[in-house]
Image (cartoon, rainbow, N blue to C red; front, side, top):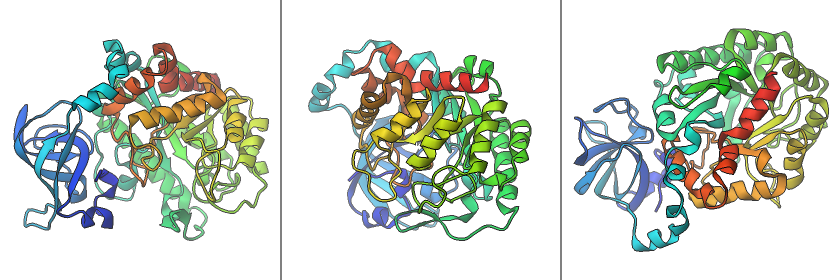
Length: 441
């Protein structure tokens, strides 16, 4: 069975005790080594040899059948999972592990990718990729005082990612997984969400400082951004922290360098209706329209992810700038409370000159080819100029098809089987760069 890092600590992982599993990750050895039969596997690269997360659900102790060559990037292993509670604190071990490599069958299936020129398989777009939606670095947990930051800048350098829209979660205090989706469990007291958001923004800034990642504040900043110095666009998933006070938007712009605002999340708020709860506002509220106008005026990207189709249509009518819908994928037959969008929903975003981020959700895309197919389906609906990448890193409960930025070259290769290098560059950053430029000018 295939195992994802988000499943560690869940009944599915624990029931796999003694079973053969496959999992991808990054190897860390106690001392620098290029080959080893014993090492630790983590979801993201460690900062140095011997440095592993303190959280037992974030690391697997690996006992290989024979010494394994350890790459700088990620590797995929197959072994027998052992669920334990030993005196050293290990929860999961992988025994008899072997590296999953290229079989003759996989080689033949990948022939179109192998035929690509080497630059297309290696450094995507010369270090210019942009992720439109991310929670990388463990900022959410750190905002609650749970754990420390995880590496962000180094995986971005490895994957040639120049910038990410790193988002706080404005309603994180009051949402919980219920009925198969995240839902609000209570109504917050006035000021509660605002105070939490200040803590979350401060944590995001602390991560940026600790990992020496510049905050992008102007269109010129993003034009100059390159993966050699990975950068952050400060974002908020949900405008709940405004609590009906429009002046807080200017405060977030000035104090926290907010440049990308998602209007709604999993809690119905004063701006409009969301996909995962009953609609009560007919789409966008008057306050929501005022926020859109102020974002246009100040230079903040407007993100309509999680909003209903009615909300998106009304935002499209109210905005003077292109919109973003940062993380989703296409569906022809939407089920109740789905986060996916229909062709008409997508076209409403594209009609503004906007861009829609495709989301590497393992529930829908089991591998990079399937993920590239998801891009292609959206391109078929709205065109090559209106699709981008929104990983929602560390925010997908089902697990991610692309768990680390260091793996981006695999997506580049899969897209390269369909698109020219210029088209791939649009999909993996160019289209968002255009929208950011227009929004901030």
